[in-house]
Length: 80
Image: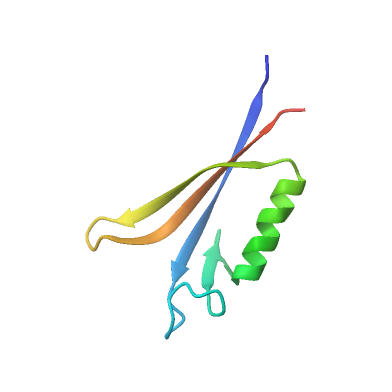
């Protein structure tokens, strides 16, 4: 029987003052650390090289204002 291990990361999105979510000005916090879209892409590629497979992405919406503030990424890989 296959056994799996799981891992998740949280990405918090916020404005840079002018543009929201544009690749050139994308700013986010990845588990509390400020990252650019390039840094985030590199991190995702590193996880893939380590055998992690992205299995789900869940937006977390603040109920009071209906805005998605965070995105949770879920990964799995087969246990060795």
